[in-house]
Length: 281
Image 1 (cartoon, rainbow, N blue to C red):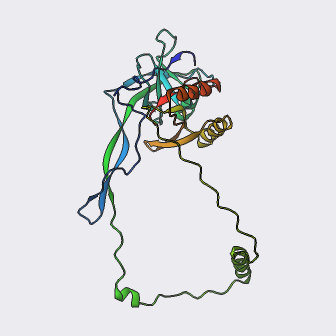
Image 2: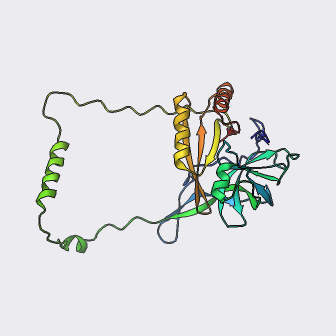
Image 3: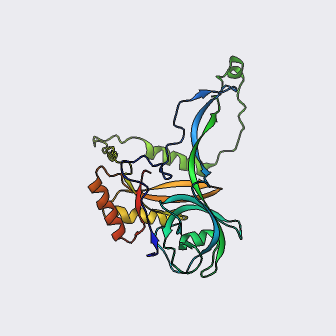
Protein backbone atom coordinates (compact mmCIF):
# COMPACT_ATOMS: atom_id res chain seq x y z
CA UNK A 1 0.00 0.00 0.00
CA UNK A 2 3.00 2.28 0.47
CA UNK A 3 3.19 2.74 -3.29
CA UNK A 4 -0.10 4.61 -3.38
CA UNK A 5 0.11 8.36 -2.57
CA UNK A 6 -3.28 9.91 -1.90
CA UNK A 7 -3.67 13.54 -2.87
CA UNK A 8 -6.61 15.47 -1.45
CA UNK A 9 -8.81 17.15 -4.07
CA UNK A 10 -8.19 20.89 -3.71
CA UNK A 11 -8.05 23.10 -0.63
CA UNK A 12 -10.76 23.30 2.00
CA UNK A 13 -12.27 26.59 0.87
CA UNK A 14 -11.63 26.18 -2.87
CA UNK A 15 -14.23 25.66 -5.54
CA UNK A 16 -12.76 22.56 -7.17
CA UNK A 17 -15.52 20.20 -8.31
CA UNK A 18 -15.64 17.13 -6.09
CA UNK A 19 -16.54 13.93 -7.99
CA UNK A 20 -17.40 12.11 -4.77
CA UNK A 21 -20.14 14.57 -3.88
CA UNK A 22 -23.69 13.34 -4.41
CA UNK A 23 -27.05 14.86 -3.63
CA UNK A 24 -30.30 13.29 -2.62
CA UNK A 25 -32.19 11.77 -5.46
CA UNK A 26 -35.37 13.50 -6.39
CA UNK A 27 -34.17 16.94 -5.29
CA UNK A 28 -35.51 19.97 -7.11
CA UNK A 29 -39.01 21.10 -8.00
CA UNK A 30 -41.52 18.85 -9.72
CA UNK A 31 -42.67 19.77 -13.23
CA UNK A 32 -45.99 18.66 -14.73
CA UNK A 33 -45.67 16.24 -17.66
CA UNK A 34 -47.89 15.62 -20.66
CA UNK A 35 -49.28 12.30 -19.35
CA UNK A 36 -50.71 13.87 -16.20
CA UNK A 37 -47.79 12.94 -13.96
CA UNK A 38 -44.86 15.08 -12.91
CA UNK A 39 -41.11 15.05 -13.47
CA UNK A 40 -38.34 15.66 -10.97
CA UNK A 41 -34.56 15.78 -10.97
CA UNK A 42 -32.58 12.65 -10.15
CA UNK A 43 -28.89 11.84 -10.41
CA UNK A 44 -26.87 9.17 -12.18
CA UNK A 45 -23.22 8.42 -12.90
CA UNK A 46 -21.88 9.40 -16.33
CA UNK A 47 -18.45 8.65 -17.73
CA UNK A 48 -16.04 11.60 -17.95
CA UNK A 49 -13.06 10.48 -20.07
CA UNK A 50 -11.91 14.11 -20.33
CA UNK A 51 -11.19 14.01 -16.58
CA UNK A 52 -9.35 10.67 -16.64
CA UNK A 53 -9.23 7.77 -19.09
CA UNK A 54 -6.58 5.09 -19.27
CA UNK A 55 -6.41 1.73 -21.08
CA UNK A 56 -3.39 -0.25 -19.95
CA UNK A 57 -2.20 -3.36 -18.14
CA UNK A 58 -3.19 -3.67 -14.48
CA UNK A 59 -1.80 -6.04 -11.86
CA UNK A 60 -2.76 -7.35 -8.46
CA UNK A 61 0.38 -8.57 -6.68
CA UNK A 62 -1.52 -11.14 -4.61
CA UNK A 63 -1.27 -9.35 -1.27
CA UNK A 64 -4.39 -8.30 0.68
CA UNK A 65 -4.94 -4.53 0.67
CA UNK A 66 -7.07 -2.16 2.75
CA UNK A 67 -9.37 0.54 1.46
CA UNK A 68 -11.80 -1.64 -0.50
CA UNK A 69 -12.11 -1.30 -4.28
CA UNK A 70 -9.47 0.95 -5.84
CA UNK A 71 -6.81 1.25 -8.56
CA UNK A 72 -3.75 3.49 -8.69
CA UNK A 73 -2.01 5.24 -11.59
CA UNK A 74 1.02 7.62 -11.67
CA UNK A 75 -0.79 10.34 -13.67
CA UNK A 76 -3.47 10.94 -11.00
CA UNK A 77 -3.38 14.29 -9.20
CA UNK A 78 -6.58 14.03 -7.11
CA UNK A 79 -8.66 11.02 -5.99
CA UNK A 80 -11.50 10.22 -8.36
CA UNK A 81 -14.53 7.93 -8.55
CA UNK A 82 -14.04 5.69 -11.57
CA UNK A 83 -15.51 2.72 -13.35
CA UNK A 84 -12.96 -0.06 -13.86
CA UNK A 85 -13.52 -2.56 -16.66
CA UNK A 86 -11.68 -5.82 -17.29
CA UNK A 87 -11.35 -5.90 -21.08
CA UNK A 88 -10.67 -9.65 -20.97
CA UNK A 89 -13.93 -10.84 -19.39
CA UNK A 90 -16.19 -7.76 -19.54
CA UNK A 91 -16.56 -7.43 -15.76
CA UNK A 92 -16.72 -3.92 -14.29
CA UNK A 93 -16.96 -2.24 -10.88
CA UNK A 94 -17.09 1.31 -9.48
CA UNK A 95 -14.24 2.25 -7.15
CA UNK A 96 -11.66 4.88 -6.25
CA UNK A 97 -8.63 6.04 -8.22
CA UNK A 98 -5.44 7.07 -6.41
CA UNK A 99 -1.92 8.03 -7.38
CA UNK A 100 1.03 5.63 -7.32
CA UNK A 101 4.73 6.23 -7.78
CA UNK A 102 5.84 6.00 -11.41
CA UNK A 103 9.13 4.24 -10.67
CA UNK A 104 7.43 1.17 -9.21
CA UNK A 105 8.07 -1.91 -11.37
CA UNK A 106 5.39 -3.87 -13.23
CA UNK A 107 2.23 -2.78 -15.10
CA UNK A 108 1.32 0.87 -14.77
CA UNK A 109 -2.06 0.29 -13.04
CA UNK A 110 -1.96 -1.11 -9.50
CA UNK A 111 -5.09 -3.01 -8.38
CA UNK A 112 -6.37 -3.64 -4.83
CA UNK A 113 -7.31 -7.14 -3.68
CA UNK A 114 -11.06 -6.31 -3.49
CA UNK A 115 -11.02 -4.78 -6.98
CA UNK A 116 -9.16 -7.80 -8.36
CA UNK A 117 -11.77 -10.14 -6.88
CA UNK A 118 -14.64 -8.12 -8.36
CA UNK A 119 -12.95 -8.03 -11.78
CA UNK A 120 -12.00 -11.71 -11.84
CA UNK A 121 -8.23 -11.06 -11.82
CA UNK A 122 -5.67 -13.60 -10.64
CA UNK A 123 -2.63 -12.72 -8.56
CA UNK A 124 0.48 -11.90 -10.58
CA UNK A 125 -1.30 -12.05 -13.96
CA UNK A 126 -1.52 -8.68 -15.80
CA UNK A 127 -4.89 -7.83 -17.35
CA UNK A 128 -5.84 -5.03 -19.74
CA UNK A 129 -8.04 -2.56 -17.84
CA UNK A 130 -10.13 0.40 -18.97
CA UNK A 131 -10.40 3.07 -16.24
CA UNK A 132 -12.72 6.08 -16.77
CA UNK A 133 -13.61 8.86 -14.31
CA UNK A 134 -17.27 9.30 -13.27
CA UNK A 135 -19.29 12.42 -12.67
CA UNK A 136 -22.83 12.95 -11.34
CA UNK A 137 -25.45 14.21 -13.81
CA UNK A 138 -28.98 15.43 -13.15
CA UNK A 139 -31.69 13.94 -15.39
CA UNK A 140 -35.49 14.34 -15.32
CA UNK A 141 -37.47 11.45 -13.85
CA UNK A 142 -41.18 11.14 -14.65
CA UNK A 143 -43.38 10.42 -11.63
CA UNK A 144 -46.66 8.69 -12.60
CA UNK A 145 -49.87 10.49 -11.71
CA UNK A 146 -51.91 9.15 -8.80
CA UNK A 147 -54.76 6.78 -9.55
CA UNK A 148 -58.18 8.45 -10.17
CA UNK A 149 -60.75 8.40 -7.38
CA UNK A 150 -63.27 5.51 -7.62
CA UNK A 151 -66.53 6.34 -9.43
CA UNK A 152 -70.04 5.63 -8.12
CA UNK A 153 -70.32 2.67 -10.51
CA UNK A 154 -67.14 1.20 -9.06
CA UNK A 155 -68.38 1.60 -5.49
CA UNK A 156 -71.77 0.06 -6.30
CA UNK A 157 -70.22 -3.05 -7.87
CA UNK A 158 -70.10 -5.83 -5.25
CA UNK A 159 -66.76 -7.48 -4.71
CA UNK A 160 -66.59 -11.18 -5.48
CA UNK A 161 -65.47 -13.13 -2.41
CA UNK A 162 -64.03 -16.58 -2.85
CA UNK A 163 -65.22 -19.12 -0.32
CA UNK A 164 -62.47 -21.22 1.27
CA UNK A 165 -62.65 -23.91 3.98
CA UNK A 166 -61.64 -22.71 7.44
CA UNK A 167 -58.26 -23.95 8.65
CA UNK A 168 -58.69 -24.54 12.42
CA UNK A 169 -54.95 -24.46 13.12
CA UNK A 170 -54.43 -21.19 11.24
CA UNK A 171 -57.49 -19.67 12.94
CA UNK A 172 -56.19 -20.62 16.37
CA UNK A 173 -52.78 -19.10 15.60
CA UNK A 174 -54.44 -15.90 14.41
CA UNK A 175 -56.53 -15.72 17.58
CA UNK A 176 -53.44 -16.12 19.78
CA UNK A 177 -51.61 -13.44 17.83
CA UNK A 178 -54.59 -11.07 18.14
CA UNK A 179 -54.77 -11.69 21.91
CA UNK A 180 -51.06 -10.96 22.31
CA UNK A 181 -51.47 -7.68 20.44
CA UNK A 182 -54.23 -6.36 22.78
CA UNK A 183 -53.17 -3.71 25.28
CA UNK A 184 -52.61 -4.83 28.85
CA UNK A 185 -55.53 -4.16 31.22
CA UNK A 186 -53.34 -3.80 34.32
CA UNK A 187 -52.40 -0.46 35.86
CA UNK A 188 -48.78 -0.87 34.76
CA UNK A 189 -47.90 2.11 32.52
CA UNK A 190 -46.66 1.27 29.02
CA UNK A 191 -42.89 1.36 28.50
CA UNK A 192 -41.57 4.67 27.13
CA UNK A 193 -41.00 4.90 23.42
CA UNK A 194 -37.34 4.79 22.36
CA UNK A 195 -35.91 8.20 21.65
CA UNK A 196 -34.33 8.58 18.20
CA UNK A 197 -30.66 9.64 18.26
CA UNK A 198 -30.09 13.33 17.75
CA UNK A 199 -29.20 14.35 14.22
CA UNK A 200 -25.62 15.38 13.56
CA UNK A 201 -25.17 19.16 13.71
CA UNK A 202 -24.67 20.90 10.36
CA UNK A 203 -21.09 21.42 9.29
CA UNK A 204 -19.56 24.42 7.57
CA UNK A 205 -16.68 22.35 6.16
CA UNK A 206 -16.65 21.69 2.43
CA UNK A 207 -15.51 18.11 3.10
CA UNK A 208 -16.79 17.08 6.55
CA UNK A 209 -16.61 13.30 5.97
CA UNK A 210 -13.77 10.75 5.91
CA UNK A 211 -14.12 7.95 3.36
CA UNK A 212 -12.60 4.64 4.48
CA UNK A 213 -13.11 2.72 1.26
CA UNK A 214 -15.49 1.17 -1.28
CA UNK A 215 -16.50 -2.47 -0.82
CA UNK A 216 -18.13 -4.98 -3.15
CA UNK A 217 -19.51 -6.89 -0.13
CA UNK A 218 -22.21 -5.28 1.99
CA UNK A 219 -21.29 -7.58 4.88
CA UNK A 220 -17.67 -6.38 4.86
CA UNK A 221 -18.84 -2.78 4.76
CA UNK A 222 -21.19 -3.46 7.69
CA UNK A 223 -18.39 -5.03 9.77
CA UNK A 224 -16.23 -1.97 9.10
CA UNK A 225 -19.06 0.30 10.31
CA UNK A 226 -19.36 -1.77 13.51
CA UNK A 227 -15.60 -1.53 14.12
CA UNK A 228 -15.71 2.24 13.73
CA UNK A 229 -18.67 2.65 16.10
CA UNK A 230 -16.92 0.53 18.76
CA UNK A 231 -14.18 3.17 18.97
CA UNK A 232 -16.64 6.07 19.12
CA UNK A 233 -16.74 7.08 15.44
CA UNK A 234 -20.10 7.50 13.71
CA UNK A 235 -19.79 5.47 10.49
CA UNK A 236 -22.42 4.68 7.88
CA UNK A 237 -22.81 3.03 4.48
CA UNK A 238 -23.72 4.61 1.15
CA UNK A 239 -24.90 2.27 -1.59
CA UNK A 240 -23.95 3.10 -5.17
CA UNK A 241 -24.66 1.37 -8.47
CA UNK A 242 -23.14 1.61 -11.94
CA UNK A 243 -23.40 -0.65 -14.99
CA UNK A 244 -25.64 -2.99 -13.03
CA UNK A 245 -23.05 -3.48 -10.26
CA UNK A 246 -23.63 -2.42 -6.65
CA UNK A 247 -20.92 -1.38 -4.20
CA UNK A 248 -20.93 0.17 -0.75
CA UNK A 249 -18.91 3.17 0.52
CA UNK A 250 -18.09 3.51 4.22
CA UNK A 251 -17.96 7.08 5.53
CA UNK A 252 -17.27 8.57 8.96
CA UNK A 253 -18.63 11.94 10.06
CA UNK A 254 -19.67 14.63 9.59
CA UNK A 255 -17.13 16.73 11.48
CA UNK A 256 -18.05 20.23 12.58
CA UNK A 257 -14.50 21.56 12.91
CA UNK A 258 -11.22 20.99 11.11
CA UNK A 259 -9.59 19.77 14.33
CA UNK A 260 -12.38 17.23 14.80
CA UNK A 261 -12.06 16.06 11.19
CA UNK A 262 -8.27 15.70 11.53
CA UNK A 263 -8.74 13.61 14.69
CA UNK A 264 -11.21 11.38 12.84
CA UNK A 265 -8.73 10.83 10.01
CA UNK A 266 -5.92 9.97 12.44
CA UNK A 267 -8.16 7.49 14.26
CA UNK A 268 -9.27 5.82 11.02
CA UNK A 269 -5.70 5.50 9.73
CA UNK A 270 -4.54 4.07 13.07
CA UNK A 271 -7.05 1.25 12.53
CA UNK A 272 -5.41 0.28 9.24
CA UNK A 273 -7.25 2.39 6.65
CA UNK A 274 -4.15 4.23 5.45
CA UNK A 275 -5.84 5.42 2.23
CA UNK A 276 -8.72 7.25 3.95
CA UNK A 277 -9.33 10.81 2.76
CA UNK A 278 -11.75 13.75 3.11
CA UNK A 279 -14.90 13.88 0.95
CA UNK A 280 -18.06 15.96 0.74
CA UNK A 281 -20.17 12.78 0.70
